[in-house]
Length: 356
Image (tube, rainbow, N blue to C red; front, top):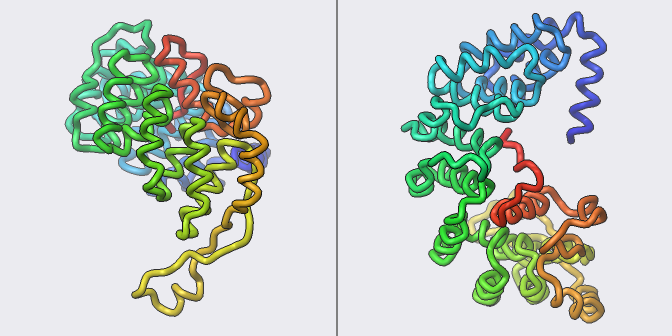
């Protein structure tokens, strides 16, 4: 996807002089992606006037339009934008200040001790506070012993705010984070379960996976594959025999994600509900069922090795380190989960995932 965006951008930059006429009208649209598609080429052109055009639109934008401009500014060089973004953070409306904070954070130009950033974390509007926490995720580390209102945010009713604050705490290496994650997971909280599979200790993960074993569903397949624990491989092997084609297919996809072995087999239609009409029945979604015999052969050949590992992704044990081969093979979620575990252990080995 990034390669396609870059190729499209290079084509636009060939006509840099006429860029304002070609993409400028997109800055006034209300679709976040369309606004980004207009602002990004202008900023990448390196023209001070083009940057001024984007910043002028940013100053009056709201909603999705503001987010699209923020995204583009965050990915652009700060050369012609930093001063204006700093002014917006200091003196702009809460919405513009939060957007500016996140853009500056993505540019690595945000001071984690900024006083306005601290106030934005407690903003009563969740959408504003979420951006402040997302900005903090990029710049705050254990080396900055600044108190943050984690408890209030993680206890908030807004799920996006809870998720943003917990992720910021994890990547800052907060010592309370593993305990909070475990308690949330034990209570069946979806956010807690996801993070427990990503960063929880092996003993706890094995116990949880055993508890999930007789309860196969699509969500459990995703949890198991995210953990990469040896017990998860056994769960997925069992779930591939589910009579529900969706569950069996998800288990097969999880098997590939963990072991690196493709077990896709024949196609099957997903059953539709009893009230489905003729069109729904005719165009019922299809899935690829796993080849269970092939998966069992792979388990017989590799099971002992998998059971001796810690966390598997695409056939690589990434529980302790990331080999060069693993880095070329694993997906971004697995890579960032490794980084989150390292941060909790006291070392931020690479930046957290981008917030925009």
